[in-house]
Length: 333
Image 1 (tube, rainbow, N blue to C red):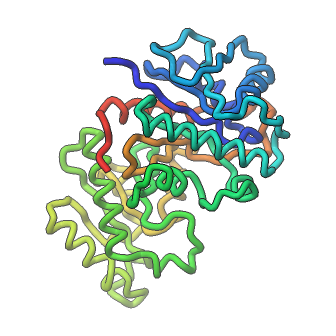
Image 2 (image 1 turned 180 degrees about the vertical axis):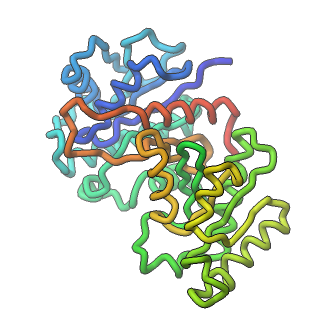
């Protein structure tokens, strides 16, 4: 089987994206693949120099035909050949503009089939907003660029797979956004993702919203009014869904193997436990897209950008998962 072509964006060039891209691609820890870095070549070359690597950056508009030789980095410039340099660690509209341009070019490569999967290095939300992007983050941006209506964010790390009903929302808004339709959509996407990984009948735990899953209505009614009926409809469809379950105990149950995935109601409910067990090598993946998309489960780390100390573990794990998913064939929308 041909090694999959992977589009790897540099993320915010003022962050650690260029550094971890160089480290990951020269680590010798990746499965056979044909990576094409997408972003300003100057930022990639600057990272090579800072890390004192002997790697060579080659400008290309398509991924290599075969896994490249060690130390050879193919880079799609995304129209950024003459882009001005940015200062490591500094938030700016220019770094946001370059990050967005790389994402748009990489999605185009995947949309036309030139690349089988997308891996995105971290972006800085303030920087992309300064550049005029209206999106809260990668998930929403890539969904718009692929005309995908229903997507979900999932984090994978250690033995846990956690999908989110709501993503980057203020906590005060979450109860109104937890709807039966959204719970059902995210759970179906989670089921399809697990099936793609080879799990024949995924066991999915659906978290409650309130402490103790509402304690029979004494601590909130969302479990009775919304979450429970949604789970019942999913079970009637044939999905092995269970819930609503108290979030303070279900992660332990999933960690010991009782469930294949969790559907959490909001960002910190799902991600705090996962990052406890997989802080360095957790992976963010977007469910529902026409191609696999993964990213490291961390941010731009501006405080250490340009210092050569960023760890590439999570990006390596993201590339590995993208390769695994690409090997299963095209995703269904």
